[in-house]
Length: 200
Image (cartoon, rainbow, N blue to C red; front, side, top):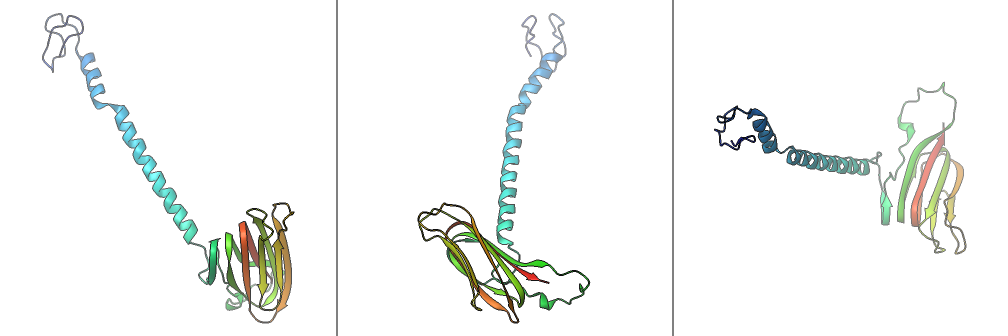
């Protein structure tokens, strides 16, 4: 190791210069710190952390998309995204031990998506309310969201060629002693949502 004070070449493990007596340990410490190169170590750590974060985000996104909830799905989605259920499970299967609770509108199924397509939904019997809303991609005078039931009940939102491009909503209620099938038909939507409630 070369002495910074006098330039004399000393042994690598020497702590003091043999010629002038200057301390070489400060030089050894600086040399060993430089040989470790903490900048390259931190780059590796940062790269690994970024890779782990990307993998975690991908895994969370995958499970969020693929765990829609209700497994009773019957879809005919010709073009577009639909990320919810297509069948509403009847509450009649559950034992009714909640007779003391006051009656109110309780959600029994919520469906949403975007694009164009259709899907069929089974709705149990009872006093049912259907709430629907949608936002069009652009106003082509054909954008719509239609919900129509096997019992003849229906609701719709659509846009004419001069209508403003905005979210529109509709709702309707009906009573039925048997389960009904509803078709949700949507065309050229940024987003749509249909929710079924039962008065119970």
